[in-house]
Image (cartoon, rainbow, N blue to C red; front, side):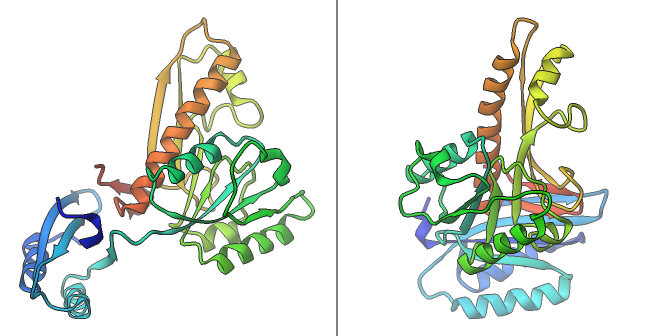
Length: 289
C-alpha cells in the first residue's frame, strides 16, 4: 500500500442509478489516479448510493484542479454530492469535557502516540484546569467556561467563539455533561460527536449505571453519535455492549461503562477523521476498516 502522504480520499452520495461506479472509476483513471481501495453501499430504502474511494496519483497525471473540475461536472450529471481530501491532511478538533475525564484522557493518549491522527486545537471544559492536573495539556489551549442555567446562552456564545477562532472542523463532546442549545447544535450539524451510555431513553438523569444495577440489567453499552437538536437522538456512528451479571455492583458497571465509552468514542472519531462516515438522513453509512 502506498504511503498515506500520497493518498487522497473521495466520498460521495447521490440518487442510485446504473453506472455510477463505472463513471467515478473512469473519471479517476482518465486523470491518472490509481484506485487503492473502494467501498460502496446502495440504500434500497432511500434510493441513495454511497461510495468511498482511496486513490493515489501516478506520474504524468492531471493536476488536482482538473480532477476537481471533472468531479464537479460529474456531480451535475449524477446529482452527486462529494468531498475530496488529501488523506494525510489532519483535521482540526476541539475537545469538550466535564468532571468525568476518562474519554478526554483516552483521546489525548491515542493522539500523543499517533493512533488518532488529528490536530487538537483546544479543550473547553466547564471545570477549572486544576480538576485535570493529572492530564498532560502541554501545547493545547485550555478554555475554562463555567455554566449555570442562567448563564447558558452567554457561555455558549463564548464556546462558539473559541470554536470559530480555532478553526475547528470537528467538536468532540468527550463526556461533556451539558446539553447544547438548539442553536449551537444546528451550527455544529455533521461535525460534532457525542458519547453516552446506551440506556437511553431508560435510566435518564444522574447515576444511570446505579439505576441499571438496581433493575438487574444484563447488558450495558455506549453510543457515539452526531449531535442534533433532538437530545441524544442524532445519527449513530458506533455502539458497543458488554454482558454483566447479578454479581456486578454499581461500581463495577461504572468502571466497565467507562471502558466501553472510551473505545466507542475512539472508533467513531477515527472513522470520521478518515472519511469513513457518510450521513444518510437520520442514519449513517460507515465504511469500517
